[in-house]
Length: 487
Ligand code: ADP
Image (cartoon, rainbow, N blue to C red; front, side):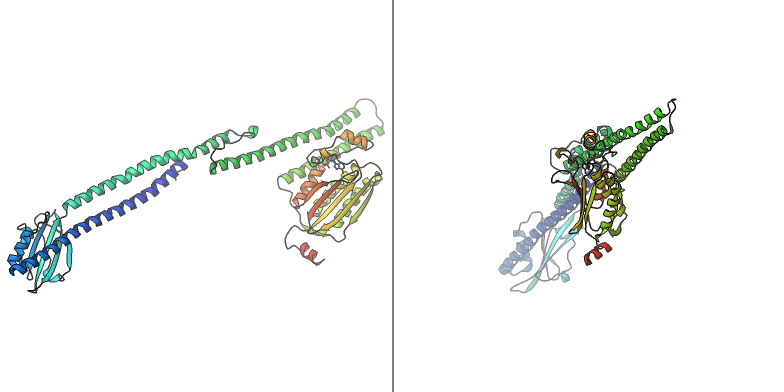
């Protein structure tokens, strides 16, 4: 196998051209040969016809066969041609030049049809290397009604010589043409493939550390520039993913550092030699436990997001009532809400049959409700609405808390993003917020894995409204779809 594309393309080019040139040359040679023979046959036919008419004229004057034939042959002058006239029995009446009839094999008189010219090629009897074209014509002339045979011939040697020259020229033209075409193709392919060579050279230089570099894009708007453009788009996406990944790792280590240092400090202070009461030990351990819980939640969240990024957040599809899942999430957060005297009111459509991953959806609603309660001051209100709009369910989680400023609206779904914690603590009466800025990212990826959306709606007045939209069913023709159709 040819491993170089350049060599392969050139070989294909030369191969196809060889086939074309050979067929064209063979066709041309056959045509030339046919034309040469046609021309020679035309002249021989004219010679025979002229001889017959001259013989008829002489016979009308003398009436004697031999005399008329001799006079006819003598009068006619066809250089390079032999001419002979025979009577019906095949006896020679006249010939020119003398002895020429001995040189050519004569036709069998019995096989000749009256008035029809017979053409054939034969070797000279004297010189076998001399091929001759012969024309024989049998005619019956008036008024005697006697038959004659006129035979003319010419040597094919000059004609064959011309044909040989033509053949030689064609024979040399094919390899010569192929050589030139091959060399031209070799360089042409090289020039054509130059952008590919440049691209692969540059691609070799690009690594994780310089993903901002791009492949050269040729000016011509051809397949290669499109390929380079596509690769560059891919590099941009990879680079963005890499940056995000790096950011994630940096943010994650930053977030993990705080609880770890709290744990370390709490342990170090407690372990100091001074005597401690049981109460102090308990307090230190409770701080450590709180921080350990926070760490566990953060690691769990990061693991979930990493799985979602790797496409590993697969849905465990079941059919269930979404209203029950929402109510369960409300009950879970109810304890936290009660501790802050926040009332959660619900407006939930009953028997909202749904197909999806109930555990993941529950997690999404818990994250939204947890935020609503967390970022609403004591005595606030949270409202949860579930309704069906066409073939999707819409869940609105509304609170009358701090709200989210316009500049932060687009960023709250970013990983590790938190609105200024100091500001929040001040507005939440020093309430400790333990989130790491991952809750909304996880909720968003759950909605998207369900082919749905999650967004922040414009809130009327203070507070925020988060809206989740998820399709009623994930698979076409599912049991949920059929049941829903009956409702
Ligand atoms: P966290 O775990 O910090 O709550 P999230 O990803 O859930 O992380 O939220 C990101 C940030 O968005 C929060 O730190 C908070 O500043 C803001 N936020 C989320 N929900 C609300 C809300 N209901 N009201 C006000 N701010 C919110």
